[in-house]
Length: 279
Length: 194
Image 1 (cartoon, helix red, strand yellow):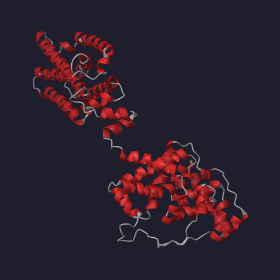
Image 2: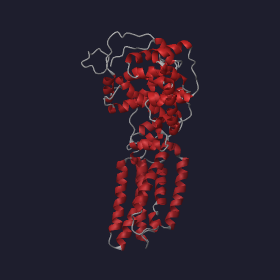
Image 3: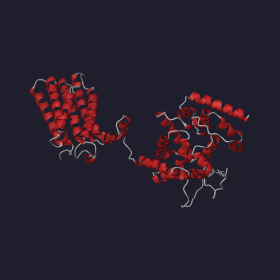
Image 4: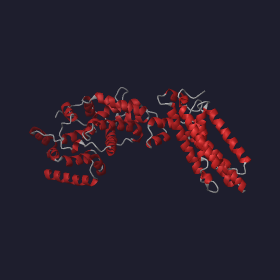
């Protein structure tokens, strides 16, 4: 198709300023779709400062790194983009980590369900409770501090307070592992109080390891808490007639105290997280 | 109306074997954009953003919103360049993206009133009327005499290639109203031209 008609500058200027009557504007608009000479004419009478400003925005959007599924999902849920980026970079919120958690829980659930004797089933349930309570401890420890967190140096240098970031991530990790353990608990044999008995211990252990991390390295803190928990629960299970002793009233009350104490310690010593977690 | 003679025959995409110093066609550029060339996107932007700004501004009174739509559109071109299969003019393809992004934005922020729907009547001088009669026959004059509401639906459906549903979203009126106004507009034009 060859067009010999072209709009002159006067017509284009009137169109650009919105003074052109409708019929002529229509015909010009239809023509512009098919004529690069006239499009160049429009460009000549356009506001280049505005065009350059808009291009800068386009270039920025085009250059922006592609965001992952998790990050986009978080943003869609109303999480602001910088928090979403930091959450998505949390090692213990990655699929591999969540997969490992699910595997550990699944193992305990299978053990509890496939045991033939009553004693075996109760042992499996006990194992499940101990593991479920420990999950967020490891997750939170991996969510900050040198070595495991790929954004550790970045977050130290960022204007966002490390403590705020740590709490955000800890909450996210606690949330996801609680959901995982909650789902797994539904498949335990004999639904009862055992399906929720790990909730307070898991919160207490997580806070205790955070409180400890104000003194020692995060991994050491998490390791100590894990060791202490495993030792106390096993020893108590052997010493008393009831294997679930630590999950009963007395144990749950003790965890309430631990939660309260740890919260106080974390709140009073939160500056310890600001200068970078201890190496 | 001045008729500019082009200095050289216009090239229209179908030409092959262009010399290296020849400007590339829109189709070539779009192919390079699809391959991830940002420079090609910049060239397409320089060619097509100016007219797109003006055309969208005639359909949306909020300049800030038009700017956002332009940005959306070219980010859309960047991401969707692979979906262009050589069907029709690149300009028409870009327009299709632009007008639909505008509709999307208007659905989220329905505040601004399209310029065309406002009764911002442009007085046509007697001389212009005569010229219009020469250029378009009675059709131009008849179009200009349509009420702004009827003209807006004609513009959205006939010129901008929108469905009645999309036109309704653009103009902020129900689809049924678009249909009845379109029928009235056609009847008026038919009456004038009969």
